[in-house]
Image (tube, rainbow, N blue to C red; front, side, top):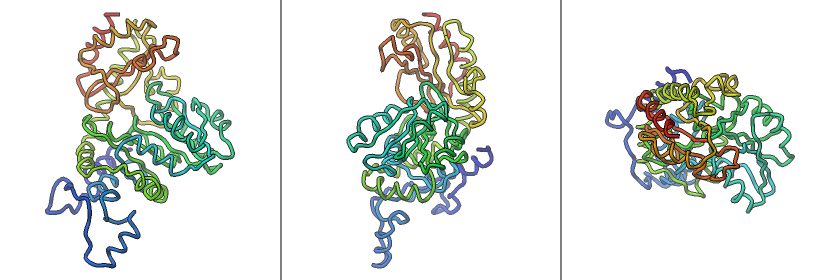
Length: 384
Protein backbone atom coordinates (compact mmCIF):
# COMPACT_ATOMS: atom_id res chain seq x y z
CA UNK A 1 0.00 0.00 0.00
CA UNK A 2 1.34 3.44 -0.86
CA UNK A 3 2.16 5.79 2.01
CA UNK A 4 -0.46 8.41 1.09
CA UNK A 5 -3.41 6.00 1.11
CA UNK A 6 -2.20 4.27 4.25
CA UNK A 7 -1.93 7.58 6.05
CA UNK A 8 -5.43 8.62 5.01
CA UNK A 9 -6.91 5.34 6.28
CA UNK A 10 -4.96 5.24 9.54
CA UNK A 11 -5.59 8.84 10.55
CA UNK A 12 -8.85 9.93 8.93
CA UNK A 13 -11.12 7.16 7.59
CA UNK A 14 -14.55 7.09 9.28
CA UNK A 15 -13.58 9.87 11.70
CA UNK A 16 -15.22 12.82 9.93
CA UNK A 17 -18.16 13.20 12.29
CA UNK A 18 -17.08 12.00 15.71
CA UNK A 19 -19.40 13.09 18.57
CA UNK A 20 -18.70 16.45 20.21
CA UNK A 21 -15.79 17.10 17.83
CA UNK A 22 -13.65 14.48 19.55
CA UNK A 23 -10.23 13.98 17.98
CA UNK A 24 -10.17 10.26 18.82
CA UNK A 25 -13.07 7.81 18.47
CA UNK A 26 -15.04 7.41 21.71
CA UNK A 27 -15.23 4.09 23.53
CA UNK A 28 -18.82 2.84 23.39
CA UNK A 29 -18.47 0.73 26.53
CA UNK A 30 -22.01 -0.59 26.45
CA UNK A 31 -23.35 -4.12 26.30
CA UNK A 32 -26.72 -3.31 24.68
CA UNK A 33 -28.39 -0.69 22.49
CA UNK A 34 -31.93 0.61 22.89
CA UNK A 35 -34.61 1.37 20.28
CA UNK A 36 -37.20 4.09 19.88
CA UNK A 37 -40.03 1.74 18.88
CA UNK A 38 -41.17 -1.81 18.16
CA UNK A 39 -40.39 -1.74 14.44
CA UNK A 40 -36.78 -0.55 14.78
CA UNK A 41 -36.25 -3.12 17.54
CA UNK A 42 -37.63 -5.88 15.32
CA UNK A 43 -35.55 -4.79 12.33
CA UNK A 44 -32.31 -4.87 14.35
CA UNK A 45 -33.01 -8.39 15.63
CA UNK A 46 -33.72 -9.65 12.13
CA UNK A 47 -30.58 -8.04 10.67
CA UNK A 48 -27.95 -8.17 13.40
CA UNK A 49 -25.05 -8.26 10.92
CA UNK A 50 -25.86 -4.64 10.02
CA UNK A 51 -27.32 -3.40 13.31
CA UNK A 52 -26.34 -2.26 16.78
CA UNK A 53 -28.25 -4.64 19.02
CA UNK A 54 -25.80 -6.22 21.44
CA UNK A 55 -22.04 -5.65 21.64
CA UNK A 56 -21.55 -9.38 21.24
CA UNK A 57 -22.27 -8.63 17.57
CA UNK A 58 -21.54 -5.01 16.56
CA UNK A 59 -20.28 -1.98 18.44
CA UNK A 60 -19.49 1.52 17.05
CA UNK A 61 -15.90 1.60 18.38
CA UNK A 62 -15.23 -1.86 16.99
CA UNK A 63 -16.80 -0.97 13.66
CA UNK A 64 -14.60 2.10 13.15
CA UNK A 65 -11.56 -0.13 13.58
CA UNK A 66 -12.99 -2.78 11.25
CA UNK A 67 -13.55 -0.20 8.49
CA UNK A 68 -9.93 0.90 8.74
CA UNK A 69 -8.58 -2.66 8.69
CA UNK A 70 -10.77 -3.60 5.71
CA UNK A 71 -9.58 -0.55 3.79
CA UNK A 72 -5.93 -1.25 4.62
CA UNK A 73 -6.24 -4.78 3.21
CA UNK A 74 -8.31 -3.67 0.18
CA UNK A 75 -11.22 -5.79 1.40
CA UNK A 76 -14.90 -4.97 1.55
CA UNK A 77 -15.42 -5.82 5.19
CA UNK A 78 -13.58 -6.91 8.34
CA UNK A 79 -14.61 -8.63 11.55
CA UNK A 80 -12.62 -8.18 14.76
CA UNK A 81 -12.42 -11.16 17.11
CA UNK A 82 -11.03 -11.83 20.57
CA UNK A 83 -7.78 -13.43 19.37
CA UNK A 84 -5.78 -14.29 16.28
CA UNK A 85 -6.58 -17.98 16.61
CA UNK A 86 -10.29 -17.09 16.84
CA UNK A 87 -9.99 -15.28 13.51
CA UNK A 88 -8.20 -18.25 11.98
CA UNK A 89 -10.65 -20.80 13.36
CA UNK A 90 -13.75 -18.84 12.39
CA UNK A 91 -12.53 -18.21 8.85
CA UNK A 92 -11.85 -21.93 8.34
CA UNK A 93 -14.91 -23.32 10.12
CA UNK A 94 -17.31 -21.15 8.12
CA UNK A 95 -16.39 -22.91 4.86
CA UNK A 96 -16.06 -26.59 5.79
CA UNK A 97 -18.29 -29.45 6.89
CA UNK A 98 -17.75 -33.12 7.70
CA UNK A 99 -15.75 -35.10 5.11
CA UNK A 100 -14.27 -31.95 3.54
CA UNK A 101 -10.55 -31.47 2.94
CA UNK A 102 -8.10 -28.61 3.52
CA UNK A 103 -4.68 -27.97 1.97
CA UNK A 104 -2.40 -26.05 4.34
CA UNK A 105 1.23 -24.94 4.40
CA UNK A 106 3.26 -27.17 6.70
CA UNK A 107 5.12 -24.45 8.58
CA UNK A 108 1.98 -22.60 9.67
CA UNK A 109 1.24 -21.09 13.07
CA UNK A 110 1.21 -23.86 15.68
CA UNK A 111 -2.42 -23.31 16.70
CA UNK A 112 -3.53 -23.48 13.08
CA UNK A 113 -1.83 -26.86 12.90
CA UNK A 114 -3.54 -27.92 16.14
CA UNK A 115 -6.92 -26.89 14.72
CA UNK A 116 -6.39 -29.12 11.69
CA UNK A 117 -4.69 -32.07 13.37
CA UNK A 118 -6.87 -32.37 16.47
CA UNK A 119 -10.00 -30.24 16.52
CA UNK A 120 -11.27 -30.72 12.95
CA UNK A 121 -10.47 -34.43 12.94
CA UNK A 122 -13.29 -34.82 15.47
CA UNK A 123 -15.64 -33.82 12.65
CA UNK A 124 -13.93 -35.96 9.98
CA UNK A 125 -12.44 -32.98 8.19
CA UNK A 126 -9.15 -34.02 6.63
CA UNK A 127 -6.09 -32.02 5.64
CA UNK A 128 -2.86 -32.24 3.68
CA UNK A 129 0.25 -30.27 4.62
CA UNK A 130 2.46 -28.94 1.82
CA UNK A 131 5.72 -26.99 1.74
CA UNK A 132 3.88 -24.36 -0.28
CA UNK A 133 6.85 -23.12 -2.30
CA UNK A 134 5.78 -25.08 -5.42
CA UNK A 135 2.33 -24.44 -6.91
CA UNK A 136 2.41 -27.85 -8.56
CA UNK A 137 2.74 -29.49 -5.14
CA UNK A 138 -0.39 -27.64 -3.99
CA UNK A 139 -2.20 -28.61 -7.18
CA UNK A 140 -1.31 -32.28 -6.59
CA UNK A 141 -2.64 -32.11 -3.02
CA UNK A 142 -6.09 -30.91 -4.08
CA UNK A 143 -8.90 -33.47 -3.88
CA UNK A 144 -12.48 -33.35 -5.17
CA UNK A 145 -13.60 -32.46 -1.63
CA UNK A 146 -10.97 -29.74 -1.01
CA UNK A 147 -12.71 -26.60 0.21
CA UNK A 148 -9.84 -24.42 1.52
CA UNK A 149 -6.23 -23.67 0.68
CA UNK A 150 -4.72 -22.09 3.79
CA UNK A 151 -1.56 -20.00 3.38
CA UNK A 152 0.94 -18.13 5.50
CA UNK A 153 3.39 -16.15 3.40
CA UNK A 154 5.97 -15.90 4.70
CA UNK A 155 5.78 -18.55 7.40
CA UNK A 156 6.87 -17.28 10.80
CA UNK A 157 9.84 -19.48 11.69
CA UNK A 158 11.21 -20.75 8.38
CA UNK A 159 10.01 -17.78 6.27
CA UNK A 160 8.89 -19.70 3.20
CA UNK A 161 6.74 -17.87 0.65
CA UNK A 162 3.87 -18.98 -1.54
CA UNK A 163 3.08 -17.58 -4.98
CA UNK A 164 -0.20 -15.87 -4.10
CA UNK A 165 -1.30 -14.95 -7.61
CA UNK A 166 -0.80 -18.46 -9.02
CA UNK A 167 -2.40 -20.18 -6.04
CA UNK A 168 -5.41 -17.83 -6.15
CA UNK A 169 -5.84 -18.52 -9.87
CA UNK A 170 -5.68 -22.28 -9.28
CA UNK A 171 -8.16 -22.10 -6.41
CA UNK A 172 -10.70 -20.02 -8.32
CA UNK A 173 -10.59 -22.49 -11.22
CA UNK A 174 -11.57 -25.25 -8.81
CA UNK A 175 -14.00 -23.30 -6.61
CA UNK A 176 -11.76 -23.46 -3.54
CA UNK A 177 -11.64 -20.73 -0.90
CA UNK A 178 -8.20 -19.23 -0.16
CA UNK A 179 -7.24 -17.88 3.27
CA UNK A 180 -3.91 -16.33 4.26
CA UNK A 181 -2.34 -15.27 7.53
CA UNK A 182 -0.80 -11.89 6.64
CA UNK A 183 0.33 -10.94 10.14
CA UNK A 184 4.05 -10.86 9.27
CA UNK A 185 3.85 -8.36 6.40
CA UNK A 186 0.85 -6.35 7.54
CA UNK A 187 -1.12 -4.52 4.83
CA UNK A 188 1.59 -1.86 4.85
CA UNK A 189 3.87 -4.26 2.94
CA UNK A 190 1.57 -6.88 1.37
CA UNK A 191 -2.06 -6.97 0.19
CA UNK A 192 -3.03 -10.58 -0.65
CA UNK A 193 -6.53 -9.64 -1.82
CA UNK A 194 -4.89 -7.77 -4.71
CA UNK A 195 -3.44 -11.11 -5.85
CA UNK A 196 -6.84 -12.82 -5.74
CA UNK A 197 -6.79 -14.32 -2.22
CA UNK A 198 -10.29 -14.48 -0.71
CA UNK A 199 -9.73 -13.94 3.01
CA UNK A 200 -6.94 -12.39 5.05
CA UNK A 201 -6.48 -13.06 8.78
CA UNK A 202 -4.25 -11.26 11.26
CA UNK A 203 -3.22 -11.57 14.84
CA UNK A 204 -4.00 -8.00 15.83
CA UNK A 205 -2.05 -8.71 19.02
CA UNK A 206 1.10 -8.10 17.03
CA UNK A 207 1.81 -5.13 14.74
CA UNK A 208 -1.71 -3.67 14.72
CA UNK A 209 -1.62 -3.23 18.49
CA UNK A 210 2.12 -2.73 18.46
CA UNK A 211 2.69 -2.47 22.21
CA UNK A 212 2.38 -6.07 23.48
CA UNK A 213 -0.57 -5.15 25.68
CA UNK A 214 -3.57 -6.76 23.96
CA UNK A 215 -4.84 -9.94 22.30
CA UNK A 216 -7.14 -9.81 19.26
CA UNK A 217 -7.61 -11.07 15.71
CA UNK A 218 -9.31 -9.96 12.51
CA UNK A 219 -10.58 -11.54 9.31
CA UNK A 220 -10.98 -9.44 6.14
CA UNK A 221 -12.55 -10.22 2.78
CA UNK A 222 -15.69 -9.73 0.73
CA UNK A 223 -18.84 -8.55 2.46
CA UNK A 224 -20.49 -11.86 1.58
CA UNK A 225 -17.73 -13.98 3.13
CA UNK A 226 -17.32 -11.87 6.26
CA UNK A 227 -21.09 -11.75 6.83
CA UNK A 228 -21.17 -15.54 6.59
CA UNK A 229 -18.41 -15.80 9.20
CA UNK A 230 -20.28 -13.32 11.40
CA UNK A 231 -23.55 -15.24 11.27
CA UNK A 232 -22.27 -18.83 11.38
CA UNK A 233 -19.16 -18.71 13.56
CA UNK A 234 -18.61 -15.35 15.26
CA UNK A 235 -22.01 -15.05 16.94
CA UNK A 236 -22.11 -18.72 17.93
CA UNK A 237 -18.55 -19.08 19.24
CA UNK A 238 -18.65 -15.69 20.94
CA UNK A 239 -15.01 -14.59 20.51
CA UNK A 240 -16.13 -11.04 21.24
CA UNK A 241 -13.66 -8.11 21.23
CA UNK A 242 -14.25 -5.56 23.97
CA UNK A 243 -14.81 -1.93 22.84
CA UNK A 244 -11.81 -0.81 24.89
CA UNK A 245 -9.71 -3.46 23.14
CA UNK A 246 -10.78 -2.03 19.77
CA UNK A 247 -9.88 1.46 20.99
CA UNK A 248 -6.40 0.27 22.01
CA UNK A 249 -5.86 -1.15 18.52
CA UNK A 250 -7.10 2.11 16.98
CA UNK A 251 -4.50 3.92 19.06
CA UNK A 252 -1.82 1.48 17.91
CA UNK A 253 -2.80 1.95 14.27
CA UNK A 254 -1.90 5.65 14.42
CA UNK A 255 1.77 4.67 14.34
CA UNK A 256 1.54 1.44 12.30
CA UNK A 257 3.08 2.92 9.17
CA UNK A 258 6.03 4.58 10.89
CA UNK A 259 6.59 1.56 13.14
CA UNK A 260 6.66 -0.88 10.23
CA UNK A 261 9.13 1.29 8.34
CA UNK A 262 11.39 1.37 11.40
CA UNK A 263 11.06 -2.40 12.00
CA UNK A 264 12.01 -3.00 8.36
CA UNK A 265 14.95 -0.61 8.45
CA UNK A 266 16.28 -2.12 11.69
CA UNK A 267 15.73 -5.70 10.51
CA UNK A 268 17.68 -5.15 7.32
CA UNK A 269 20.62 -3.63 9.21
CA UNK A 270 20.69 -6.39 11.83
CA UNK A 271 20.13 -9.18 9.30
CA UNK A 272 22.96 -7.86 7.10
CA UNK A 273 25.30 -7.83 10.09
CA UNK A 274 24.38 -11.39 11.08
CA UNK A 275 24.68 -12.63 7.52
CA UNK A 276 28.40 -11.85 7.66
CA UNK A 277 29.06 -13.20 11.15
CA UNK A 278 31.31 -16.23 11.49
CA UNK A 279 29.06 -17.89 14.10
CA UNK A 280 25.92 -17.67 11.93
CA UNK A 281 25.33 -20.27 9.23
CA UNK A 282 22.49 -18.38 7.52
CA UNK A 283 19.93 -15.64 8.00
CA UNK A 284 16.38 -16.37 6.83
CA UNK A 285 14.78 -13.05 5.90
CA UNK A 286 12.74 -12.80 2.67
CA UNK A 287 13.97 -9.31 1.78
CA UNK A 288 17.64 -10.33 1.79
CA UNK A 289 18.94 -11.19 -1.66
CA UNK A 290 20.37 -14.40 -0.21
CA UNK A 291 16.85 -15.71 0.47
CA UNK A 292 16.01 -18.44 -2.09
CA UNK A 293 12.65 -16.77 -2.83
CA UNK A 294 13.88 -13.17 -2.84
CA UNK A 295 12.51 -12.50 -6.32
CA UNK A 296 9.01 -13.61 -5.29
CA UNK A 297 9.28 -11.60 -2.06
CA UNK A 298 10.16 -8.47 -4.04
CA UNK A 299 7.17 -9.04 -6.32
CA UNK A 300 4.63 -9.63 -3.54
CA UNK A 301 5.91 -7.37 -0.76
CA UNK A 302 7.13 -3.79 -0.67
CA UNK A 303 8.98 -4.33 2.60
CA UNK A 304 9.34 -6.63 5.57
CA UNK A 305 8.67 -6.79 9.26
CA UNK A 306 11.08 -7.16 12.15
CA UNK A 307 10.84 -10.95 12.40
CA UNK A 308 13.40 -13.39 11.00
CA UNK A 309 15.41 -16.46 11.95
CA UNK A 310 19.09 -17.22 12.08
CA UNK A 311 20.75 -20.64 12.02
CA UNK A 312 23.67 -20.87 14.39
CA UNK A 313 26.76 -22.87 13.42
CA UNK A 314 26.20 -25.33 16.25
CA UNK A 315 23.98 -28.26 17.16
CA UNK A 316 25.00 -28.07 20.83
CA UNK A 317 22.00 -27.09 22.92
CA UNK A 318 24.29 -25.73 25.63
CA UNK A 319 25.75 -23.21 23.19
CA UNK A 320 22.26 -22.23 22.07
CA UNK A 321 21.38 -21.67 25.73
CA UNK A 322 24.52 -19.58 26.29
CA UNK A 323 23.74 -17.39 23.28
CA UNK A 324 20.13 -16.91 24.38
CA UNK A 325 20.96 -16.20 28.01
CA UNK A 326 23.77 -13.79 27.08
CA UNK A 327 21.46 -11.43 25.24
CA UNK A 328 20.75 -8.32 27.32
CA UNK A 329 18.29 -6.35 25.17
CA UNK A 330 16.37 -9.25 23.58
CA UNK A 331 13.63 -10.51 25.87
CA UNK A 332 12.95 -14.26 25.94
CA UNK A 333 9.28 -14.63 25.02
CA UNK A 334 6.74 -15.99 22.56
CA UNK A 335 4.86 -13.84 20.06
CA UNK A 336 6.28 -10.71 18.37
CA UNK A 337 5.12 -7.50 16.74
CA UNK A 338 5.53 -5.14 19.69
CA UNK A 339 8.03 -2.33 20.11
CA UNK A 340 10.50 -4.63 21.87
CA UNK A 341 13.15 -7.05 20.59
CA UNK A 342 12.65 -10.75 21.34
CA UNK A 343 14.51 -14.04 21.04
CA UNK A 344 12.86 -17.47 20.63
CA UNK A 345 15.13 -20.48 20.04
CA UNK A 346 13.48 -23.33 18.14
CA UNK A 347 15.02 -25.74 20.66
CA UNK A 348 12.84 -24.32 23.45
CA UNK A 349 9.91 -26.22 21.90
CA UNK A 350 11.80 -28.90 19.93
CA UNK A 351 14.90 -30.00 21.91
CA UNK A 352 15.69 -32.90 19.57
CA UNK A 353 19.05 -32.13 17.93
CA UNK A 354 18.18 -34.35 14.96
CA UNK A 355 15.42 -31.92 13.94
CA UNK A 356 16.61 -30.03 10.82
CA UNK A 357 15.46 -26.74 12.40
CA UNK A 358 17.14 -27.40 15.75
CA UNK A 359 19.74 -24.62 15.41
CA UNK A 360 17.25 -21.95 14.35
CA UNK A 361 16.79 -18.94 16.61
CA UNK A 362 13.97 -16.55 15.81
CA UNK A 363 14.59 -12.87 16.45
CA UNK A 364 12.15 -10.01 16.53
CA UNK A 365 13.90 -6.73 15.83
CA UNK A 366 12.13 -3.99 17.72
CA UNK A 367 12.23 -0.22 17.59
CA UNK A 368 15.45 0.26 19.57
CA UNK A 369 18.61 1.60 17.97
CA UNK A 370 19.89 -0.95 15.47
CA UNK A 371 23.43 -0.20 16.65
CA UNK A 372 22.50 -1.23 20.20
CA UNK A 373 20.90 -4.45 18.98
CA UNK A 374 23.93 -5.32 16.83
CA UNK A 375 26.24 -4.74 19.80
CA UNK A 376 24.09 -7.02 21.95
CA UNK A 377 24.00 -9.80 19.36
CA UNK A 378 27.74 -9.46 18.79
CA UNK A 379 28.63 -9.92 22.45
CA UNK A 380 26.24 -12.87 22.82
CA UNK A 381 27.65 -14.60 19.74
CA UNK A 382 31.17 -14.11 21.07
CA UNK A 383 30.26 -16.31 24.05
CA UNK A 384 29.82 -19.36 21.80
